[in-house]
Length: 359
Image (tube, rainbow, N blue to C red; front, side, top):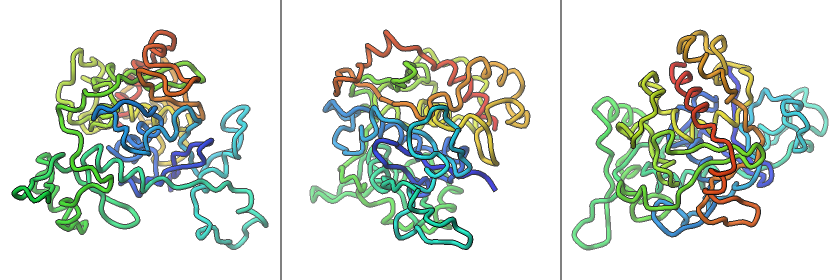
C-alpha cells in the first residue's frame, strides 16, 4: 500500500480529488500526469487579471488560492510535520474532503472523530471543466476519470454554429484501442468543453497574456517558467511539457540527461507539486528526495546535483502566488518585483525533476 494525497488550501478550505482529474492518488501518479492536479494547482494560485487569451481570466477557478497556504496532504501525515503549524491538524487534513454523507462510523472509531475533522469543499469538478477548455482535453468515465486531448478548434458544419471536436493527432492506434477499452464514446470527445468556451487555447495564443512567475510569499522564492523552456503566461504554464519540442532558447542543459519517459514532470507545475509535498518518503508512490529513496534510479551524479538544494517539501504550507504584471491585491508583488527581490530556485527544481524523471 502507498500513501494517498489531496492538494488542499487552508484559508479557502478547499481541495482537489485527483481521480476526478485523471490522476491516481499517489504523489508519483500525480506529478507525472498532465494536465491533472499539477496544472490545476498552477491555475488556482495564479492571480486573476488580463484580458488576453493566455490569461484565462474568464474562469472563476483562476486565482481562488492566490496568496493562500497550500500543501499536498497525505493520509500518513503527522501533526508535527510542519514546525509551528497554526492550521488544522495535519493528521486529519487528508479526510477533510469527505462529504458529510461519506462521514460514516467504522468499527473502533474514536468517539466524536468526525467532529474533529475539518470540512473542505471539493473543487475537482470545477477544475476539470477549466482544464477541458484551457488544455483542450475531455474527461470521461466515472469515479476514476480518463482524459483525451482534442484539437483546440472544432470543425464547424456549414455556418450553423454547431461544431465537432476531434482527437489530437498525437495519438496512435494503440492509444485508440486503449480509449475504446476504457469505454470512450464519440460524444466524450466531440462535445464542447464544460467550461463553455467555443475553442481552447490555440498555439498562436499561448504567448498572448501577462508574464508570470510562481512565487512563495513567505520564503521569498520563485520559479521562472523561462528556465523550464515554457512560455511565461498562464496558458504557457498549462501546456503539456511533452509538446515543447526543443523549447525556446536556451534549452536547459540539465534536460539532456532526463529520461524521455519522465519528461512530463519537468515543468513549473511538476516543480510546484514537489515543493508542496512532505519531504520524507513514507510509502510506495511517494516522490523520492534522494538517491537512496529512489532505489538508485537516476544515477548518483544526478541525485548528487539535485541534493545541493532541498526541493521536495520546501514550500509546503506556504502562501503561493502566480504573479501578474499588475498587482491585483495590495499585499501581492508584481512579476517584476518578485524577479527583482526574490530568490530564483528554478535551477534547483530542474535538477531535482531531472533526477526524478528516472524514478
